[in-house]
Image (spheres, rainbow, N blue to C red):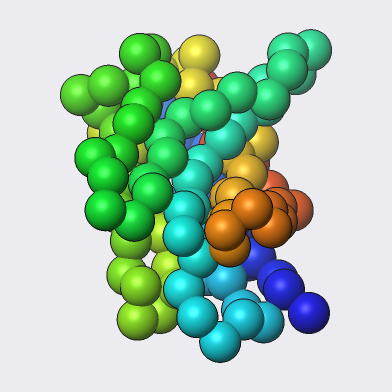
Length: 115
C-alpha cells in the first residue's frame, strides 16, 4: 500500500525558513513525478511546486525565487525548501506522488507564518 509521509511544518515568523520533506513508500520504483500543493483556510488546494523526472521543476508565481523543490529518487523523497516566508504562505502543505498516472496524497503538514 502506498503511503506518503510529510514532515517539517511548523510555526515561524515572517522572513524565516522551513524545509518540508515527504517520503513515499509502497512501490518498488520511484514516482514519475512528485510535488507540493497547499490549501489555506477557505481556499482551494493549489500547486506550489512540481517535479517530473527529466523536466525542469515548475513553481507557482507566488513562490518563485523563494521556494525550491528537490528530489532524492534513491529515497523516494521530495523536499521543499522555503525561505523568506510570508504570512500568506500559511496553509496545510500536501505532498503528491504520481506513478505514471496513479497519484497519491499525503495527509498534509501545517505551515504557519505569523509574528
